[in-house]
Length: 155
Image 1 (cartoon, rainbow, N blue to C red):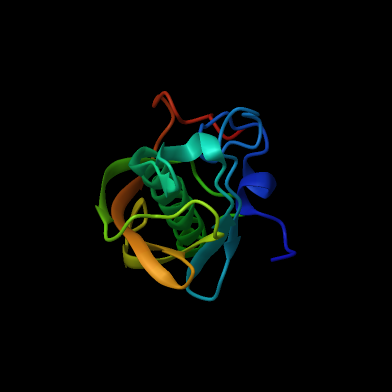
Image 2: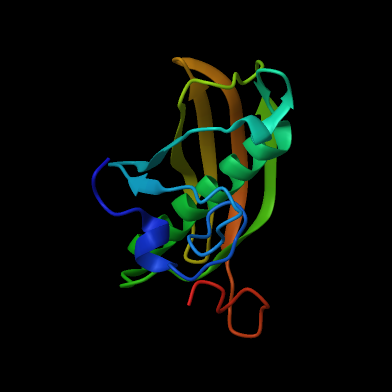
């Protein structure tokens, strides 16, 4: 994954806890385009644990949410022929914790679009550790218009 992360390319000043490059205390996830969505890898730290050796479900939720949001933003941008993504926000998302997510292995997330409209996308995300699915997510992400508090958050 040597290409530039979508977060770094389109929102270098974002302070989002999950995906903001400018939030030094955040997770700073890096998502990369694939043929049918986005992919990312994440290395958890000891501070991300719920109990010894197992990653906190809230951290897993943040990874799925932000990665899914960027998947939607890229798909909406492509659909509408834009040069940069509109700011998207989470309208709804769910997380299914399938098995404990271990501390140690690199977490690998892949996402793809389930449904796409001009201003919204439904996304499915899978999180794996050591090749095993530990969590899945599904979300609805919506492009916001001027006047919404998040409208300029990526600029």
